Amino acid sequence: MTHILAIDQGTTSTRAILFGPDMQPVASAQEEFEQHFPQSGWVEHEASDLWSTTASTCRGAIEKAGISAEKIAAIGITNQRETTVIWDRKTGKALHRAIVWQDRRTSELCQTLKAAGHEPTVTERTGLLLDPYFSATKLKWLLDNVEGARARAQAGELAFGTIDSWVIWNLTGGQSHVTDATNAARTMLYDIRKGRWSKTMCDLLDIPMSMLPEVKDCAADFGVTRADLFGREIPILGVAGDQQAATVGQACFKPGMLKSTYGTGCFALLNTGNEPVTSKNRLLTTIAYQLDGQPTYALEGSIFIAGAVVQWLRDGLKIIRDAKETQPLADNADAGQDVVLVPAFTGLGAPYWNAECRGAIYGLTRGSGPEELAKAALESVGFQTRDLLEAMHADWPNAEEAALRVDGGMSASDWAMQFLSDILGAPVDRPEVLETTALGAAWLAGQRAGIYPAMDEFAATWALEQKFEPNMDEDTRAKRYARWDRAVQATLSV
Image (cartoon, rainbow, N blue to C red; front, side, top):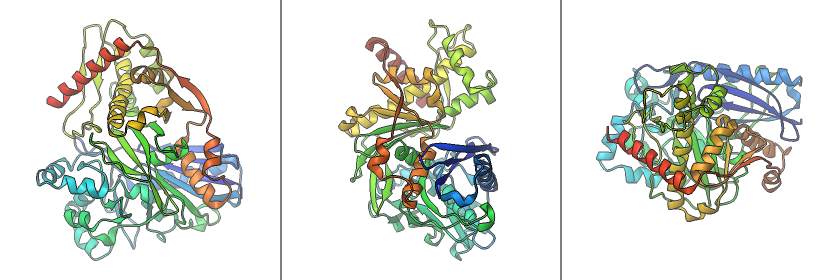
C-alpha cells in the first residue's frame, strides 16, 4: 500500500486528491455543489450534496490514477470548518440543510449573550468570541427551529457534527461518530485548555452533550470505510479542519511560523507552541494540530471574503467569466483612481468581528469600470491580511520574525501576492505545492499509516516556488493603508 487518498470538502466544492509514496499529487477530481441563500445573510448546503460529491470525487480520483483501492493505505480528511449538521442516528438523514460557517442568522442571539456578559466565559473556555461564525449558536438555532429536534436530541436520537464528522459517519456506514481536536475547537463548545467538551458552554446554550462526537488527535484511528464504497475497507487515519491542515501542509511546526490560506475566505494562523496565547486584539486562540495527545496552539485571524470577492465579480457583477481574468483587468486599471472595496458581504471578521455591517465601495468616479473594481477586489485581500498581521504582531511580538507562507487558489495570482508583499512591506513565500490543505491531511494519515516520514523530515521537504519582495515605497504603503482603514471605519459606522 503506497498511496494516500485526501478528501478536501470545501465551501463551494469537494475535491479528492490521491498522493503517491513521494507525497506528490497523482490524480484528483473536483465537483462544485449548489449554494443556498434562503434569506439575506443566511447560507446553507444540502448535507446530502456534501456526502455525494465526496463519494463521487473519491471514486473519480482513484479511477483517474488507474490504481486499485488495494494500493491506498489510508484516507485523510480536511474540511470547511464550523459548518453544522444534525442527523438521525438510525436513518443517517440530515434534519435540515447544513448551516454554513458564513451564515449570520444567529447574530441577534450572539448580541444577547454578549450583552448578558457571557463573552469572557466563552473566550476563557474556547478561545473564541461570541459570533455567528461558530457552530454552537447554529446548533442551538437548529434545535430551537426544526420541529421536534430538541426533544429528539434529548432522547439521544440525533447526532451533531461539523462536516468532517458528517463525512466520516457516511464513509463508515454510521459506525464512527468522531471528530478531531481542531474541528472541535471551532464549535464554541470545546474547552481547548482541558481538551474536552465544555459542560459550561453546553449548559449556556442548552445543547445535550449526548449529541457531540468523540474527539481524537489529528492522526488517529477514525474508523474504516464501508467495503462497498471503494472495493475494500480503507482506514481513515488523519483529520484536520482546512486551515489547520494547511498549517500542517505548510510545515509550520515551530512557534513563530505563519501561514495564510486564500480560499473562499482568508485565514492566517500563527503557531504559538504548547501554550495558548489569549489575544488582546480580538484574534482567536485555537488548536493548530494535536498529535500524541499534545495540542499545539495558534492565534488565528479569519477573513470571511477573499476568493469569494472574485466569485462576486464573476457571478454577481458578471464582469469576468473566469478568475484568471482579474489579473489583466487589474493591470489595466487607471492608476489615477483609488477605488477601495470593503467586501463585508457577510459582515467583517477579525479583528473587527462585526456581523451587521455590509460591503461598500469608496472612491468611485464616472471613469470607474471593471478594471478598477477588479483591482480593488484583489487589493482588499491584501489589506485585510495586513489587518490580521498587525493584530498578531501586537499579541505576540515574536511574529515579527516570521515569514508569511501562502497557499490556496488565490495565492496562484502573482498580482495579488505582489500587492500583498507590497502592503505588508515584507516577503511572501509561495511553495511549490499549493495543495497544502490536502497535503496536510494526507501527511497526517500517511505518517499514521507508516508510509510518510516523521515531522522533521516532512518539514525538510517544503520547497519555495516564488518569493515576492515588496517594491512599494513606505510613504505610498502608509497612505494606501490609511485610506483602507478610513474606508473600514466608514463601513463599520453605517
